[in-house]
Length: 302
Image 1: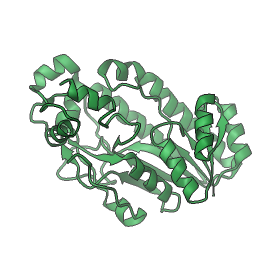
Image 2: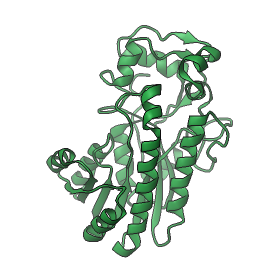
Image 3: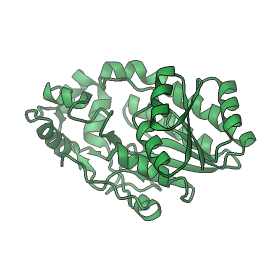
């Protein structure tokens, strides 16, 4: 198949290119950076230099390639996972996701694209008992940053699902870990945990759903041939913050994480940090296991 990846220079883009090339797909990669283009060429993709925010450039690229499928992995996240950097990047990231999504969708019909895969989220489901499957709605009331993120993902999915003539797959990923992500020994979270900058907040009962970046890439490749719809791409052992963070600290050679109250955390880190630590709901990957043959590895540090 001819596959176009938008956002191929990101954390999941590189393993995804390798996975698709190993399956003999012709892979094209939309990137705005000539440096990224060289790296993608070395991985076996054909780079297409262009700005996802330039509607005409996107339409021209998609029209020339005429791929079977377009995979949207567009993000603009900061290098460091800190409150200040995440806040500074939020509007830029939203713009890239929303306008990039619109530009890609607008280019699909004339190019004969059959399938559209979109990066979405599996960690902002509405509260409830047990793990959330794909039928559970996203949360409607939360901390300000979380609510803004939820609105973005809802808008992305709604626009894609309303686009006629395409098979739409929403890939609701968990928190990425593994090479070139925040969650590694050498990565940003590993360093922050060693510096005792990531506390367990309150009881730390918020349940996180992780997925190794290579497993996420494998599921994305499998989604080229699945039934349209939403899929939670998460591992099989979602864990409360107090469990996974304690184990992660041990794995990266850090002392046990400090503990703070919710009130202290609001003052120091803001309400979004408290929401993540205390209110996240884990996601079920049973649909992906059943329909994608998804067999993710257990969370490496548990």
